Length: 122
Image 1 (cartoon, rainbow, N blue to C red):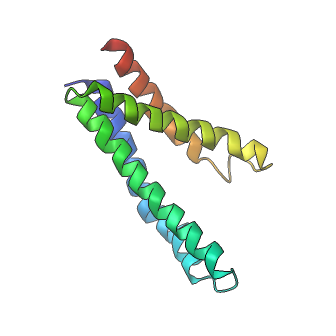
Image 2: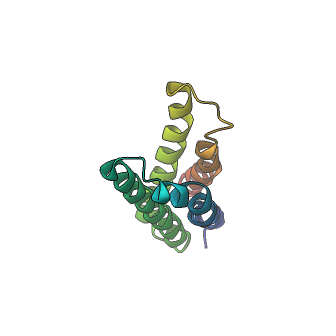
């Protein structure tokens, strides 16, 4: 068992749960109820929210399978975490938003770091 991948998988699963339940309550539910937005904007944004939920689940699964010996899936999960961290850290300044408003990118830094540590050790 590769412990750094297992820890990364645990964190990724935790972030998926936070996304699904906290994000659902704070973002997805109000968005779904907003009838002032054009249908295409509202429904496309909700679709993207659900796609992210699935991607977070896959990231956790890939890292878990990496902990059990699948180095290729560990690399995929680590790459997904690094992409989430990079986009999440670059987008707020580009949008002139504070990290207090969009802190999500920081959540994936330890996931990516643990994955990279596991890859370096394998």
